[in-house]
Length: 102
Image 1 (cartoon, rainbow, N blue to C red):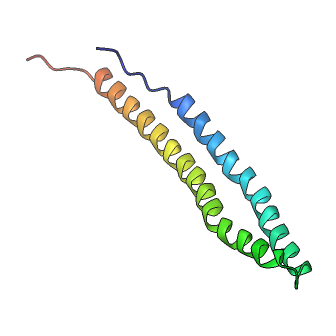
Image 2: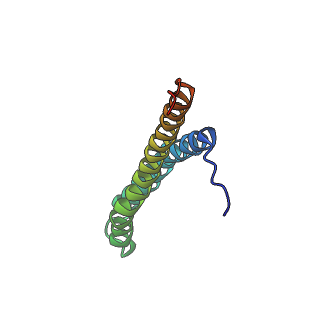
């Protein structure tokens, strides 16, 4: 049976990366959605205008959900790292406490 080792530093680093990705993802997505909406308005009367507007509308929810999943992953990884660190401290305290004779 292989040992399982949890490195809280690596969990925290992964959480920070996921958080950074979520934050960095928001602006380009908003830019793209705004551009699609703007272009559709500028092309009013052209057959492509409705398609551009629909493209922006249809992609807003899935891209927003992806950004939220990244943010949720970051929060969950941070919570997991904190729980493991707390557990390690509790075990260390338990082992360092004087043990009575049995």
